Length: 233
Length: 229
Image 1 (cartoon, rainbow over the protein chains, first blue to last red):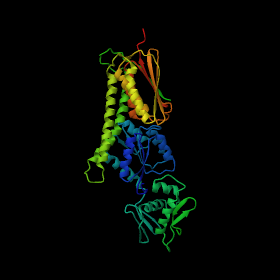
Image 2: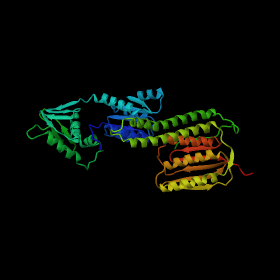
Image 3: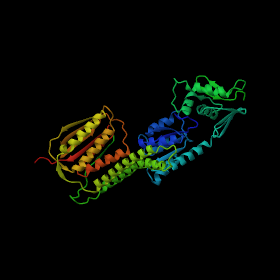
Image 4: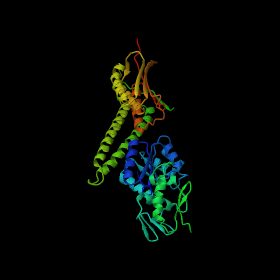
């Protein structure tokens, strides 16, 4: 199972099952967390549900709902979601249509892996410019690239999963984050009311972040989830 | 339910190189575009797999896995290429016009397929209401057309399904209808469409008729018969 935050979430919508499976394996080997769908309509539903993706890769020739219609449906509600279109149609018209409907980039099949990954990284970079490397809440500092967490000069050693939880909470500092969101972003799992895995890991994070005598930064939002905030601010 | 019907339009004499009739040119081009689209999928996998294989050995790359993937995609590409070639040939070259016994031709193939399908829990039922006058047409193209639609019907079927092959005669044709009444909501990919285009071209090129309904999957192939007397 991949770990969120470190693993950026990619939705691949491709109707050729062999190609879709192959792309998933290649992207996962590059530490992306990948969800596969084979139908345009299913993709609209997945994107309409409370599911967060960092990138959408889609084929133009899809059953259910074609790629252009899919982009047109999703773009108004997800203006920042980077969309990369894969197409076997080499015509300028198809690419222009894809860009006009809201796609960010187009790649013609058969493409090379190096080019696909370069484009994926460029799109991610463009989007991740919105998330700074360093986040700070009170005296707690998180450095994403260095994967380093400190509180008032004290280095906090976190496991990858704990780091991922804290990263999501830091990104949403001052706002409650639901258990479902944490489950989805950190474990890449759909919301599952019967599991208490989030609470278990949250306790580990809390024990490391909020030491006795320190100001409490991690807060439980009863019946919902958790929030990171400086209570005194 | 979407359906498409093709009727014969070529009238070139035997042995001549027939040109594609104008009303078929557009369909042929659309079929070729679809076939090229189908080929782009395995070619993409192949290109990436070869790219990975060209990395120096000794890293984390499982070369054996990529060799296996490449072999499967080469096979897939070759099959699609062969179907495209056959499609163009069926459109450009005139079909044979010979008398043949349809069931003598199809019998062994149907028995083979029945056994294979049975192993996957899928039934194949043949219901004949046709007298045994010979077909007038191209045996090779007929066999290929029926093999293509049988393969596709099987790939769109699940365990417990029954593929029905109905044969009947009327209006100077022997009509073979292949259907899976339980095969709802199945996805027909671009490579499936290439198979259907090939089946259609093979039947239409011998003065036959072709009709497709996608959901539930049903294909009708009508072949000219030599009427008694």
